[in-house]
Length: 252
Image (cartoon, rainbow, N blue to C red; front, side, top):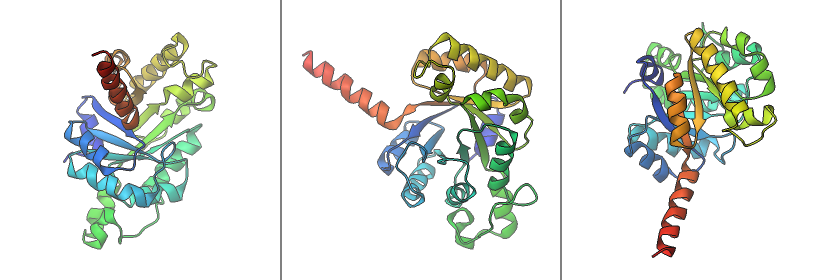
């Protein structure tokens, strides 16, 4: 199975879903439906590392690349997620180049970083991988940095200079708050700012991602060159489907 970086290097879009549930049934369904990745959410979701364990297993089992969005910029949170054996780590609210460098440093082993070393974890097949294989493979795990607030936008150029951020992810909801139109992710101000960010990323040959919750916006951003597209949230998709079925039944 290709790594997330390999998938994105083919210059094709990768599609995924944010997951707030801690039920592996949902995760397996997302994979069997054909999505490329799932973002297991530890910022706005209820999952601990122990609760993520079966979700990671369900992801790989169904051909889905598991990405963990950690709760914040924390070396311990990043290491514990990576030790589960994931395809990517997603770090929210990067505000400047130093924070971006720390995200990379804490995600990589030497010489690229300072991640704590333990081979008796799932990512190393509980020590059954050779040392060389384990360290090399883990340094190929994708690092996704989220820029979504006023500070991150202001410091975008210097963040883009940081080596090791594989995907720059735009958080449109937090961005809308920073721009004074909270929740209005289709506002012209938000759409224009995202266009500017995408253009800057493309000018630096950097892969860019974002979140969408309708097909028109997904097409808009794909046409702009966004490759890492997270479509909605598992519980939101389920809620919409339940409401649609209920409304259809009421209309009988």
